[in-house]
Image (cartoon, rainbow, N blue to C red; front, top):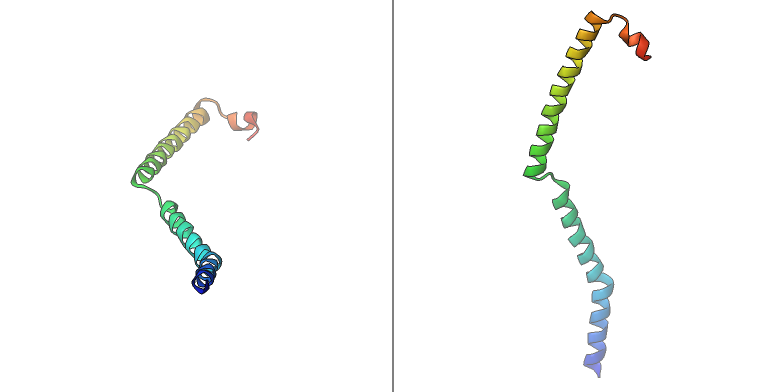
Length: 79
C-alpha cells in the first residue's frame, strides 16, 4: 500500500511540475522552428521583390510618358 501512495505522489508531481514544463518547451521549440523562412519561402519572397521593382520601373516610365503626352494629368486625377 505504501508503494501505491508513493506512485500516486510521483504521478501527481509529474502532472503538476514536469508535464507543464515539457509541454511549454515542446511548443517553444516548434515555434522557433516555424519562425524561420524556408528556402522555398525565401525564393518566393525574392521573386516578389524583383516583380515589385519591375512594376515600380514600369509605373515610373508610364508617369514620364503621361507627363510628356498629357501635362496636368496628375491634377485631373486628384493627386
